[in-house]
Length: 431
Image 1 (cartoon, rainbow, N blue to C red):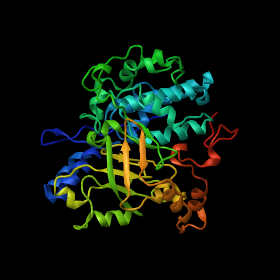
Image 2 (cartoon, rainbow, N blue to C red):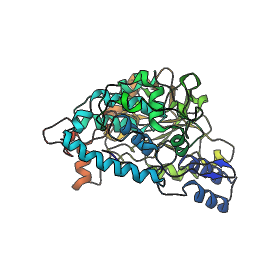
Image 3 (cartoon, rainbow, N blue to C red):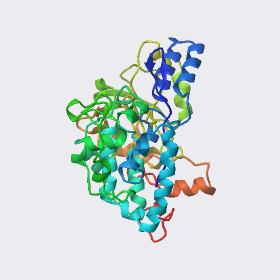
């Protein structure tokens, strides 16, 4: 049984809700623009993360704990209990008792984790408006159990399931509000048309039985389908000559004016180069420029860090610009927002098309059409491809070298290839 740590308590600043990650990015931009001073930034820091726990927005932690609950691997309602709430200790104790019962019943995780339960997790992720990181983690989790899950399946579900949970960064509430509104069981009841309700859970009951008595206590926090937070969905999978194996965006937290965009590329080969350029008062960029960061994927970084929410150039922040189209083979914190295209696959470090982009190229983006296109001729594309050479890696041996040789691409879950599949001796052992 998975026992989550629980989210932080709600935060407020000057009467308004502020959440971990989401508002640190928002107010950091204001600080960089000169609109708030160091003292106010420090006060904000003290309010945004005022208690122990995971991020109180719908970040990656809250996304994944809710997914695990939807898959039947946590006790009902566990994911939303705040870390500092006394209910958390009661839940942990109940989980311990239930584990002993499961042993007596011979109820195994392998009986719970099925394609149906994984798809229940996918549906919950999308209705939550969850982190784009889930698109990687779900594929990897399923792969460890020998269950095939593809980006196309995620995209197909995303076209059906709207965002119903009104939490930052897609909405304007926090995890404590979600807890009081009824948590995941209340949400699952509202999306039951998209669930396999006969799936077995750690309670020994079906998902249908677990949510039978659930009710929503606040329809503004957990919306109805007719009043969705976003009908555009929490995920869109883009393809094109720049991302033949896929790239992901989060439409519900994506700048609407950039849903269809054509702009000039400004390319950075490293995170350090990018950050130095952001402070350059003479940077050759405007609000229509497409910022491109490469060599930030699983092999290239290595480790695919959360660099995908590229900062806005300081020069443009001072002009009032707060969003731009940004492309990368990196990930992004689930707490963040903006016109960020992520997980471009294959990544630049292994010769993916992102490695061939040059500053000045025109890039076309169309979220509705699921398109990401580099506007160069096929001949020019092939010429650049023939000239490309991989960068030298400083990791000639050791774990990092092993990792670089065996990590899969984002569309395959960024797992180690020798851990995929439901082997007789998986790691960790699943009985």
